[in-house]
Length: 181
Image 1 (cartoon, rainbow, N blue to C red):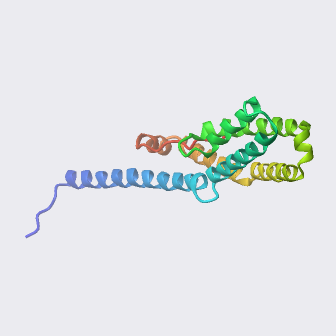
Image 2 (tube, rainbow, N blue to C red):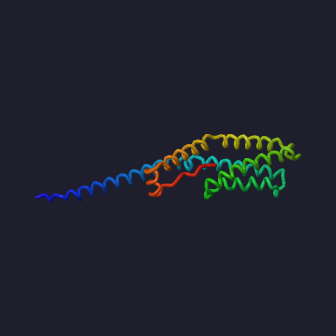
């Protein structure tokens, strides 16, 4: 013989199932959306790879600069430090954004100094190398990867800021995606 559950217990079970479904659905949905944004950041040829390539070009330009400029030159050291941060696997996205701007400034300064160095003017190989590296740095900075990541991160952050469901996701531990600024 079947036993019947009291009406109150049935309603309570239904509410628990609805609450679980809401919590689980919210968390997994936001987690999947965040994973898509994170893939733009960390996947192959994503933003971190582009920044690492820029860092490698900065280090290569440093080698050229050391052939013609003093090793203690402030702009060369700034370029080296910025390139090292861009290549670091532990640097946060904000640190990398600042390093990217510093690299851009240092490359311009070092390029100008190289153009004035007599030994650089005599080295056709290094002049071509400088042209190639600056063109590569410019093409990487013009890459759509940065804008695509920032747009996806801003969209996700706006979705997470929505009332009720976004607040619930934040309570469940979903965090905003940092912007590359």
